[in-house]
Length: 55
Length: 517
Image (tube, rainbow over all chains, first blue to last red):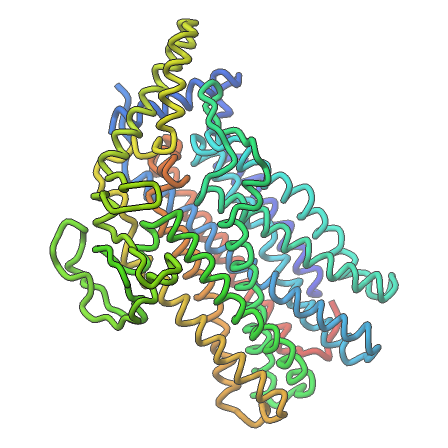
């Protein structure tokens, strides 16, 4: 296989693993489970406040 | 009841981020440095029209292509981690962190990606001038990518140009230029890019020396060494200057990092710089009285001068920074306990403000907002349980700093020697130097990684200096899930690294005569 084909193959396999395996199954957006912006704000503010209280 | 965050989760989240960033950083510096070298070579080809320079450029461009193809997008994994592992941080930083990364993605990356195609596939399809322009634009695009990433990183070390909005729980940027042109960002950008140029120069010197050792393609190797050594010499001298600028900024904005870099526990006037030292392993805390060093060789006055631009300047040590009370431009320094108290007031004010929103009590909202604003500069201290947690890992920061600086001095010496000998035309006879150049390649990587350790380990416990510690930044995931992805990355990146080295070695062995892709 030529160098060019080898590199293209590596790029494609790498991108497939990154986006279709890692991103999809291992790296969901943690705040994605909250539907609205207000819910996200509420969650983060609770986290920031509670972690200080629980210290 | 809300569970407190397990320290092993913090450690594994940090380890995962460090692993990803450090592997990513194996690819980036070579792209930045080798890119400039091959662009200079192509410029010579454009000016002289000699086929020799076209062949030379194409050889290095091939190695650049291998590094680029294998390294490209490894940095995107860091962005995955922001969303999953560092969700509090990602939300909290809002558009400040997002804006530079978006500009990086839209402008710089696309610029790089567009012109790299012309650079690799356009040799016989576009004019020489257009091809040369594409090569330069590719490397300018890569450098601009680094610029925006480093601006984002610099903001974490020195948060400016923003205001915290308790309604959205986000920091909002009000002064883009304060973020983009902060002195920390400017120093960081030049220091980091120059380290990439040094990496590229070390790589060209090492690979070319291998050809001389093998007595192959000697004209090509000597011509490459001349360019690599000259660029390396310029970069290694300039990096000493930007390093001084960076250290000065650290002294002003992150004095604890500087104290850790120097193993300085008790502050001093006329403080000396530790040129060489062995830390005392028994000195595990600022609280115990053991000597900080088993052995040290200091250069008198230099630390005061570098940190304060005054040989009589007082450089606070770790104990001073914890206990406070020493004089600063703004009066006596606060102790860690005072900062922690202010941090707790700020967090409580945020809590009360959020309650007041729910109660629709505008008077209370205004009152709590004032308290929050007045204490926000210490917000992150509210999470600190023990002042000892404000001290980063001193041995790691101290030794990494020395490795970086000692190697920096070694590079100046090496590039100076190789430049002089290559101009005199006697480099080819110095076989011992060929071996030194060859074995300097890994040292280039070690210096770059050591610099990253100084910058990032030295600023712990902070994700954002004084505003948010790593313990408050991470998502509440199970430690085992972070461990799993850590090992997945370790496997993936190690495979990529083995592929990079294997393909590189194969193509280097073929030599510049082989220009097939």
